[in-house]
Image 1 (cartoon, rainbow, N blue to C red):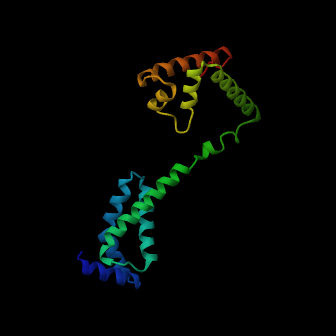
Image 2: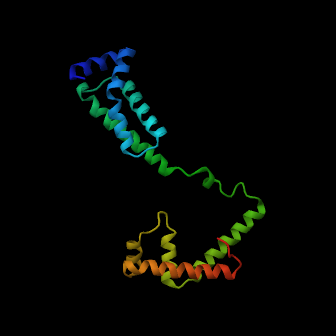
Image 3: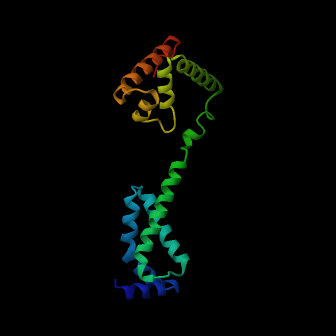
Length: 181
């Protein structure tokens, strides 16, 4: 598609020519799809990004430089994809959002008791092991390098220290009747 054809198609599309819209979409969808897929979105999200990009163009009604439409589409698709990714990061899966709501009262009590025993077990760990477990429980968990820096140990020591801490915590829980995974 030449620059002149592109400018003409865009002008006709904005005037309501469905054939021009179809030609634009047919000729430039590959640009939008490539950008959306580059963000490793699922096909439903890729489809949404593409649709939202074209809707944005339809609502725009004017570009400073219509010849740069492919670049505008790529930029808009990238922004749409980033919005999708950001919304996914902020979502809480429904089963996690209300994890305890559907539990029977007895189950809620048992869960609360187990959590209290787990907190006591973490508190009973020696200082460095306790701090390591706390760092692992952060969201997101600390990396081995961050843990090593925080504890003042070599990065290679973090794994064995974690294993000792978790083994000690497991023995603490087992001694209190929590012997299942």
